[in-house]
Length: 160
Image (cartoon, rainbow, N blue to C red; front, top):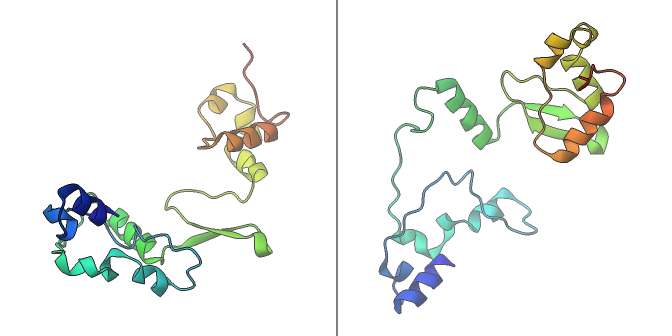
């Protein structure tokens, strides 16, 4: 798509319209979306590396990760995620089970009730100052609603 657009804009048939085209990234993290792909090999065959244009590329490899320089444990964890070898946590049962990457130093709760009980045990709920120092964070509004539905009657609530 980029190649065709640049050829059209530049009015020639030279790869990328004769312009220098810089792309960066780890191909493990930016695999193309291939509908109905049956194997990882089918996805790789649709990637830039398998394109006729690949012969025009000059790959450069960094000898050391730059963004994670000095954070060896985090760098190793990212490599595990990229290679698909990172430890996983199982949530749910049977066909409904979901496997998520286990984040180091993060506790995982199997359900909302367990999460609320861990963050707001009775000794915390009975102490407003201690309860005010704790929070359950959620990235989606639907998760906030689920957490709020689980709290009434169990969690201390501030009054105006």
